[in-house]
Image: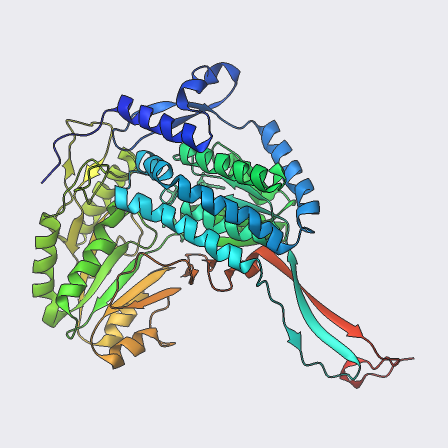
Length: 517
Ligand code: NAD
């Protein structure tokens, strides 16, 4: 059932402008003459596919000045005690809490997320600020048992340098906050290059952080925004003043960024594409499994890095499970993401719609059978937008298209006979982000989590592949890039470790018993 009406572009523009104003950023009307002053960047909404306005893009000169100032700021920020740096992030968390509706509006307008998911994304920002504030008093090193008398061996964690953050369109604010809240308490100023598809959310976050800095007496130079295309991502990758490049996006992007950072021996934190699967065994609780699968596969219109893209089902339960998923897919309300009843909003742009149609055609060429969805909706109301029904495709084998991440709601179904076969299929893709098993059999669950089980950075039992909490380290293996962000000890990527040996004796014993002089 499609919602009959979509909001009009003028109303969305007004709503975006109010949210920006309340966050302390300039509203869209004030950029009317942007084109007269230099290069511009369009702000678009996937809800209608139309442009909301044109923003001034960062110039190369401004980007250079931003990097220089970020580096200068690092030289003082690194000596500010970590709990004092935490006060900045605490204030940021308060401002994000006060403006969660505004930010959620902008996330819906720019990324097309339904209301509850947009609010959930902002909630994640607040959670990571809380986490980082606690972390600011827990950047622990170790004291190590040394082998020499009269010596103390320990390690200290120091700020690393400027953190360059490259982010994707689909988590336009959460990924920034995961990086920024942690980088700031670790003593690293941030230079942010957001997706060119989501500049408005970036302006709002930047304004809120500037306010937090002013309110807490932190230097304004701890954060800089570069609005523009991938050339600014390339600049962050190449510039030796950027100690850490934290890049979230496609495998294609990571393949280009990582060698450039490596060429100058910089540090990279990569959060790239996923091709996440769930194994469903004969003992699975099917009610819970269907709910877990439908949210993970169709939620966010299939545009999460952790979206469920492959279902590996035991052949004994394949038929009843597929039947229930087809039924659930038929009930998913699609349309205006601001409408509280909507569960599936638009894809980010028509190019994503085309990529989905091409993937479905390839899957069918490989012998796949389309069981549900895949059709475009609301094309007459919004010809420049891409509303599509989530697709379910039964595949005879894990062909090349199944092994590829298509950033759209396509769930491929494969069947298996033995758990070994299921795990081999599961791991038989180049990506390694998130994974799940649905089972009530403890042996199967533990095998999936064992060293010869799922090869992903995230492995779940009886819960879908998407929707991670911030307390754990987030990231994946293989082509997903190996980076870890957010909770646990992910903060270590933002700091450098010094090993300290202090001799408080009057002797100079050498390590390993070496005699010299
Ligand atoms: P994208 O790769 O097109 O763009 C991501 C960012 O990289 C953008 O800011 C873009 O301007 C920049 N960029 C692109 N090419 C670059 C280059 N050569 N050098 C420097 N910067 C460059 O990705 P997208 O379409 O915005 O996002 C979707 C992708 O992101 C999916 O593959 C998804 O799985 C992935 N993603 C991963 C995670 C994760 O945590 N693993 C989270 C969100 C999204």
